[in-house]
Image 1: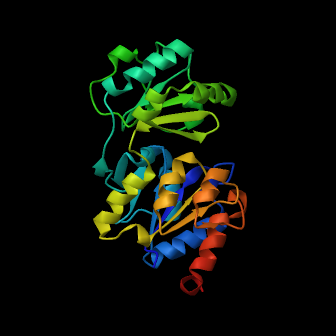
Image 2 (image 1 turned 135 degrees about the horizontal axis):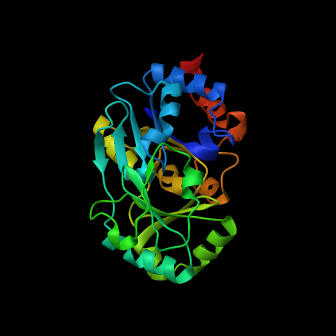
Length: 271
């Protein structure tokens, strides 16, 4: 039986205009009130999605969010971390060297702010993120000596296409590289994805992946879709995500595909 529902945001729970449909809100609120855990899983910090958490009523003592694509599991109200992991500045040196040689931008994120790397070409990440998070430009050598959640290349989709093709085998081994959006390429710790954070949260509640239903559409959702007892790909999902999913929604993200699937899966609970 499903005890937890994990939800990607962009092109999954959210409409293309970055809003949650009334149908999705009503369905998820009803399931949450019935005792099903509803967990948003995102690459963003919690402050950037706080409006969505309030809209869904995910503000009780037992509500958590998976942020930074699995690197931070955080309690919603207190902002206290349940689990946290990441990379050092030293770990990002090969990526910085690659970006400098190839002419790509780079932003490095810890768990509180973004550091646009000023040694490199300008990034569009600030405009893409549109979130209440501090941006502190720094030269790579002046980055703080502490834990970081990930690095991001944010630029035109055509340029990222070239970057993906240019990635060396060493870089692919060092990092978990995911194209979370056409204009965003993310570099995480090699063993990091949303399923890592979900495993820690499931263990916290005494559950396992058989108790999880997960919804997603893109590369950075593959881990949790594969691991979940019921991995659900959106109708608009990338082909690779659909290939590993248990089920596929009958509607896309702009037509409340999440709610449509949940209404069938939890018909007795929602009747």
